[in-house]
Every structure is written in C-alpha cells, then in structure tokens.
Amino acid sequence: MDIGVLTVPLGDQPLDETLSYLDDIGVDAVELGCGGYPGSDHLDRTALLDDESAQADLRETLSAHGMRVSALATHNNPLHPDEDRAEAADTELREAVELAAQLDVNTVTCFSGLPAGGPNDEVPNWVTAPWPQEHADAHEYQWGVATDYWADLADHAADHGVDVAIEMHPNMLVYEPRGMLELREATNEHVGANFDPSHLYWQGIDVTAAIRLLGEADAIHHFHAKDTKVYEENARQKGVLDTTAYTDEVDRSWLFRSIGYGHDESHWKDVVSTLRMVGYDGALSIEHEDSLTSAREGLEKAVDVLDRAVFETQPGDAYWAE
Image (cartoon, rainbow, N blue to C red; front, top):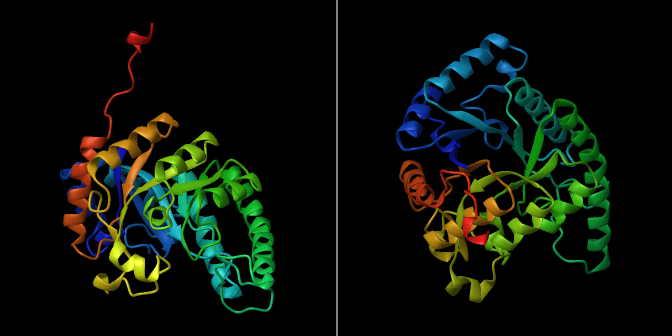
C-alpha cells in the first residue's frame, strides 16, 4: 500500500512541478484526471491516446520523480438522459480505459452515472425511497438502463485488461456497498469500487464493515483517502440529506474534511489494517475537498497521518501461532 494523490487541486501548476512537490512531501502515486468533472489539466486524454511518443514523455516525467499512476480519473454521467451529455461521458470513459491499457495503468476511476426516472424525463433522478410506488418503478427502470450500459462497458474494460473503479456517490445510482455489489454481479469482475469513505460516513455506513463486505468479493479496485465530519448540532435539526451550499460551512450537517479532521488517527489505522486484511495493496489516493483549508495544507496533513498508518513491509511469519 502506498500514499497517492488525486492531482486535481494542483491543476493550476504543470505536471512536472506537481510531481516534484508531491515527491517532496512523501507521495508515491498519482491519480490523474483525464475528463469529466476531474478535468484534464495534467493529462490530455485525446493527445496521448494512440501516441506512443507522448506516452513515453509522460512515463519519463513520472520516472524522474519516482512516481507511478494509480488510476486515470474521468467522473461523469454516461447514463444522463441528455443524449449528447451521455455520449460525451461514455466517450471519455471508453477512451480512458483504452489509454490506461496503453499506459499500463490498471484502473480507471469513475461514477456509475444516474439515469432519469423514466424514458421521457429530462433530468437524472436520485431515488432514495420506494414509496409512493412511482419511485420504486423509477428505480427499477434506472437499474435496467444501468445494467444494459454497464454490461457493455464491462466487456470493453475486460477486452483491455483494465478495472473500472466506481465511486459510490450520492446523486448517482450506485452510492452504497450493496448497490456496488449488485452492479458487479450484473456485469463482471472488472467492475468494482473506488472506495471513498467520505460519502459513506454521513450516510451512517460503517466504513470498516463496508471494506470487509466488498473485500470479500474482491471488489475494491482503488481507494480514495478522504474524510468527513458530521456536525451533530445541525444534523439533529435537519438530518444529513443536506442541500446547503458546501461553502456555507457553519450551517451544513456535514463537511468533507482532510484526513484526521473527521475521524482520528486510530480510525485511519483501522481502515488501513482492514484494507490489508481483505487483500487491498494499492494506493490510498488522497482527494482534497476540505473547504476549511488550502489544498497544499490539506494534502500535507493527510500525508502526515497516513504515513504513520501505512505498513511499509509485508507481514512476517506468525511464529507465535506455531
């Protein structure tokens, strides 16, 4: 297991400078945005795809800083009811898979997407309860759309030997672990989780239990190191389904926080240990979205906590059990 960073918050500086900075603070891997919401500041997907010379330049830049790529990121909505938006997101995702294979990167991170609630609707519809009945009907319709799409996308990923790691995210069809397993079972083993605990904390999901659940199915393909703090004084009044702006921090029921500012260091050591128990040995890719501090300070504090949590060696013989 190594410490990585999703480089999106550092997109205002060139990749070479970003890698130099991350190397200096103890980072070993990067997750590079190449489309969708993460953008493409550090990796121009269309420029690198099928261009061996450009790919060689990228490899040289990464090697100069002792850095590997844990994943390519293209989070968007390929199930959007607007056909143009869905097509653009689908192209991004399929090309990201193709580019990942060409770069010998094992994983592409993304969202499941979210369809409309019916064939004539114009906007995505996040269904969170089965009643009145039209909501249950909408949810069934959405899973039909998603299964058809993801079965084909999973075959594309398998053809290129790349895993697709879906971030369980509210306002997407897959937002919790059992939904993640349902989609995986409907597709193939190349579909799994980009396990981001920050979206699970505020839903009341036990993160280590979720790691065990998905780990038993070998369904954790990537991991986002990102924390969340629930502010009970607000949550007691309005719950956690909070539409308050993220920048109105004082009135929100919860906020994304830097590692260690939502849960203490002992919790993160438990997370790392549980990941090791279920066989995950990839990157802990820090995603900075803490509005109470700068990207650099948030990243540096996260690295500081994770550096004490991550094991640097493989387990030895359990001599005491012999």
